[in-house]
Image (tube, rainbow, N blue to C red):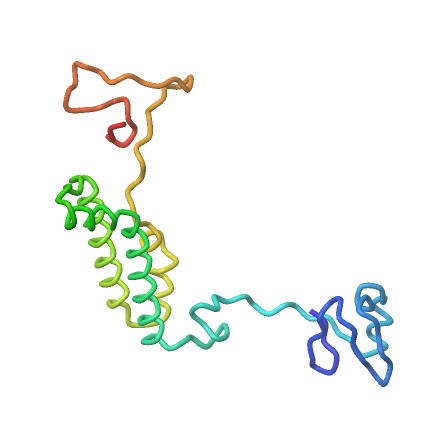
Length: 177
């Protein structure tokens, strides 16, 4: 980052120094000696910080407001995930066609996960704790891992062994296809 009289200079932006107007590409074209003669110094960029949670590297945003914001965002996300199957619920109320059990279960799973996320958000007491939860592995996950077929060392699919009916070797995480 370049500074002139403690004021940051943006690359590819014209600037004025000592009554002289410099073109937008001046910082790219001037040598180090020419920059120093004008009074331009180069300093390290400031440390980056998570601007969703902090105003500056040392100044966290208000925890209560962030909890309110993330609570609303979590509810919105849950509603968005459930919305594609809302028509089935309306159809059931309208003409009695039942919502499939797996759809009801998935909708309830989303609601349960939402409530767990909301409880975890509410349990935080500092902005740092909230940031750690939101950026951690649990918050962004809304569904279980999709079943994946098991493969042998040559990359071929593995068949289920009929001798072990309680275990399905054809799937890596016990899922069914």
